[in-house]
Length: 253
Image 1 (cartoon, rainbow, N blue to C red):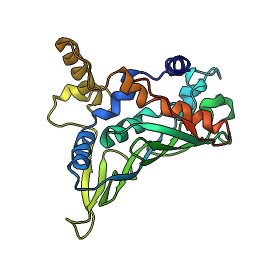
Image 2 (cartoon, rainbow, N blue to C red):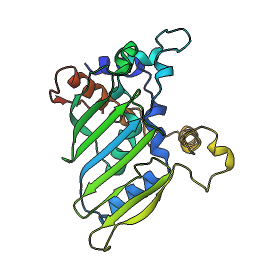
Image 3 (tube, helix red, strand yellow):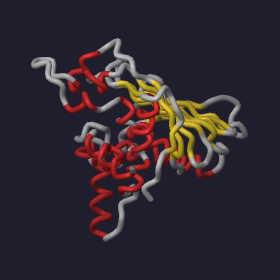
């Protein structure tokens, strides 16, 4: 069964690089350190949203031919959201359920044109994660959103997307929430580091990967961890096709 899942990952275009990409946005290690410090308490609930209208990449607007993304349900492309959240939480998903199979907007897009899908996940540490995904919903600009609700406060990015001004509240330290910068660009890196199109994530990812190769060690997010950030979306889509039935998420460790 695990071999079938891995093959589905490869077939739908998910990869080590995609799974790891957004984990290299500079706010991710900042939030991870804050959560690890205990100042926010325990993470109870987290949200990730990725809404990006790419209908022209699902079906070629000139030829009308379906492209490979037509065979990729929204929840299969989960890693941009789950990657940062699970890294910040230092956790993995053990159960998943999903909903969403409507084609109101883009029926010619096959499963890649499903209007929207939402997943609920339970983690090993008993936290809850909600994920929202769409490749066709009319949302401008495209949205990446992250939020963590903890026993002693919360931290979240802007509803206007990233970069933007998010919020931080720590119960024992603050009278009211504080605005925080949430960016995808590490200004300490050279200018050419921004050429990849996702802030400085690609540059940092490649540098880390090459350093791991040179040192003869596994990268910080290896192939098993990359699957931890990807497989839950495949399982959640299976659940959505079974009216939201809760399903176990295997570990390839």
